[in-house]
Image (tube, rainbow, N blue to C red; front, side, top):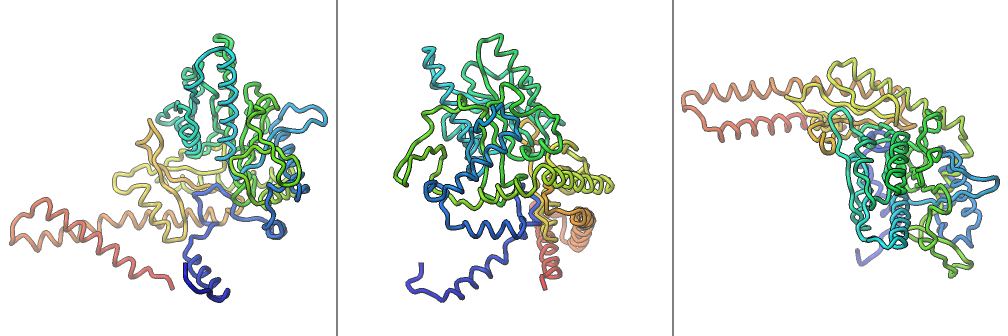
Length: 464
């Protein structure tokens, strides 16, 4: 930190200039997180930027807005609530914290049950698919729970319910199902998982429950697939998390976790404090946090309603189909994602013997697009895919433009081997008189030719 202050204008300009080098959030197709909201909501966010949500006694209206959000989301997920009964849930900084809280509730309930039965309670485990987001691995490692993963297989990139139930034992605190896989957007079969677990629980006398990680799909399924059984309509589903900052259409920093009933959240996990002015219950991993995202979520829920969310999700799905069809017309890609699920398109090269998905991803950045390439988890790690997430602000025009740019990238990649081979051949002709070169000399020449080619392209593709 500098010894002396600088003018506020200078500080602003320094930071603003550096931030210009960041990518364009709207062209970041790697992220599920919302990058655009209406100006009216932006104003509400800025007006609440200085409110600390945890000061419930000072900001009772903000607390009430959070409670309303919890109740609306609980009803959206078909929680079995009586007339006038308040839902059980809490706002978090994202689905990662929500999953930690839900996992802790499952672990504590399991421990209490095992202690009552006089059985060992020091080796809990949780069953998931290998396709889970990293926050599940964090939960397992941070809170000392064994993570039992159902491996994927070629062509089936989500958790197999039959295999998951086979892995359940007396120490399983819950089975986690994903509504909207990060890898390909597919919904896991929560209904079949529920039916299989009910049967196993009857046979064994256990009561293994289900948690649904609906981080991506929780604000999609109720509007696009209302008849799909995945939520509290299934008796073993005890808690659900959802990301408000994904398809809840709020900027980054808000998630939700909803419990089926009060009985599913152990009382000993809830803390009561009174040093902020009144008795306040709290069940979060952090303490202080901003109020803006909670207010923004409430804005979206009352502004859009069922009609608005349904229209937006249908539009996202239509744009995903436009992109998918455009990619299929190139004849160069296999589509890995499903039509039903999170609106995204995951695809892989039919022939990656000459060029890889990572090269396509890298070259798309020259056009401003951020399209991630990654390998699938075990046992499908030999499959590499590219993924484009379709958000509210990704229009049909952008989808068509992306296909055009992908075709340009493919054309450029197709010309690379010819150019490099020509340079190497010319080099070899010039060296005939000298004699045959060693393998290391040939490798060095290839490397040098590639470096020169890349350097030449940078010179001719500068930014004006």
